[in-house]
Length: 404
Length: 121
Image 1 (spheres, rainbow over the protein chains, first blue to last red):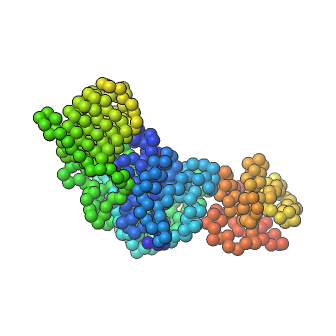
Image 2: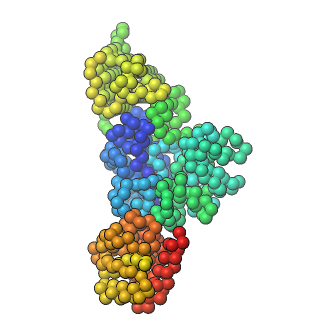
């Protein structure tokens, strides 16, 4: 798809994911042991033959920049392929991006240089597997100016989404941003069509509407401003995600909160996860450091290195401790007589002897001292750590803990 | 009295516009390039900008983006003898386009129109 570029909005602060987003933007948050959230969107692009990709960043972008530099150097520049990170440059004016539409507007010179016929606008915050070629084919077939990908959601969730109203031809006739009283799907009063933040635009229309928006009283957001303003004037269609869903089960997650992040990770340790990472035709690309294979050691009475119902990444050593229903990123060390259950341990975490951890997310490079208990006394944990409404304990990156 | 900012690098033309527009009853301020234009925009708060494109220091296209960033609503007329500008996406942010000419009828017409539209808002 040479006449197409993708622009991934990767500037999301992800405040509700704090402290995981204390040092990194949301697209850069680790997921599923070895991935970063943005890997799913980038992999979708590659598998959809879209290989001219810009990631637009602004806050805390170093982690993302490194990940893309190291992990995504897989395209061929001589063939005109690239993944390029563009930090906010204040090229057009002296402000940070005001909204999603403003982020694209401020990169209008990038579009100018590439002059693609169409632009695919994506979010770097979402986890799903989608063949964008299906959506683009639909866009062309309908002669659309803009096509918005849509997924069915329960109507009770309407306040979290842009809600799309379509006619019989799937032309969009209404767009409500986070409504309390949503327009439901005809014949499905419990369902709404939610915007996935995936847009195919014809470039000229995109640029004209962005400029108009830049000159209007607006919060410069696609969902709030640009799309509602286009519905009456332009040919705006919705694309049913089911027709482009690579996984086939309607999996699409905006892991916007710690609880949602935890649940989406834990799905992966079930026998048949909703998110299938094992599709040989649709691998998820990421950065792999050259770590040795995961290892378990010790098998004597009372000191057995075991991992069950878990994802164990390269470089991990489970040495005489036990891991259940957990996700271990690379280089995690589990020492003897320790127990880890229902937890997510990010890269380089070290769990000391006799430590006990349950229902926790432990960010990179944290050393859990011998004998410490986490997740067993939430009142005590809440004095030092983030504890979510559903009782997940989160320990931030590099936090130093004293012996317990 | 409505205030017009004329941005033009060529001195003789600048004076010409200034005189012609003053005789139409406007207050006229001038700038020699985009950078000066932005300073004048902030200092003198004009009602409309007539903007040349090819200028030293900062050209009209770059100035256009920055002007819109500072004052979204101010009417801007691109005034140029250069015809390729519409290839430049940013030029689409202008409210009107005038081809440079010794006859200012067209320019004066566009100014009247845009100022009227502005005061109707």
